[in-house]
Length: 363
Image 1 (cartoon, rainbow, N blue to C red):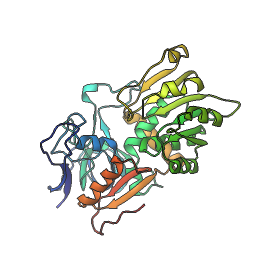
Image 2 (image 1 turned 45 degrees about the vertical axis):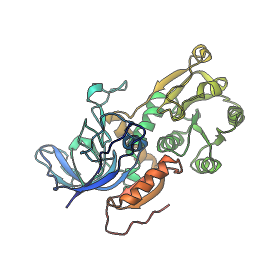
Image 3 (image 1 turned 45 degrees about the horizontal axis):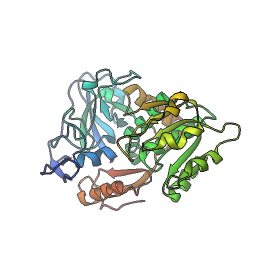
């Protein structure tokens, strides 16, 4: 029978609890009017999933399936589906609900939700089959494998919004700093920015990750563990453009203090996370320099379609750190979560859903 992967509820305080994962068998779903049935081939983890397991995320469901990222094939269409060409085609599932096209934010914030382990929507990818409205899938770029496709949606959408919609710096020759390279969003931004012809500089505490980022097109990298990393970065900037147009940041902390002297007037900081601290300082120097701080969380359905079209045009392949085979291999899936928790990955952590072969991690 078809399976879903869900959380198992146990007692514990937020931040201290760690919900186990479990597999349940369910009847095969049937698409209704305007819906399609997708056979899921691959899913990918996000930090959101780790936060959910620690009860550090709102509206957690213990009955709805896990995971927001998924690649699959449309195997059945319901009545009144207009996109009949979707049948037998590989697709990416939109990782959110309730945001059509408004560049400012969801049209109704109360109706917005990220899919997977959510009480706000039953939609999720951690299952063998998913029934979704026909407008919640996008044809997968033909050059992507199922694992690469699954690695794209959530981080690709977030990175696209941070860079393209928010930064005002997605143009040839701009200088962009992407912090914390190795995470999914940071790598997506790196690949998108390279595709636009930007000069991309990265930071990491791991020299190996800096070298791998250069292989993907980064112009240079700095180790943020150095007390003078901002001076190291300044030395890397082009002499004819010795400043940053934008920073795409997922760390927070003292990012303004460290970079204010190399930010151009009116530069933008696109902030999609704060792993260093839930707070960050904002200096009067930034106000006087007209620097803008813009928050980023996911994006709209229009941005998702635009992002996928860019990936198709530029033949971008999302970076995968590790793949395991089998939705039912809970031990291997738990090890992926451990990988994420310790920050060892460079790229996405992927689960190939089919259990027909024994699980074997692939680097």
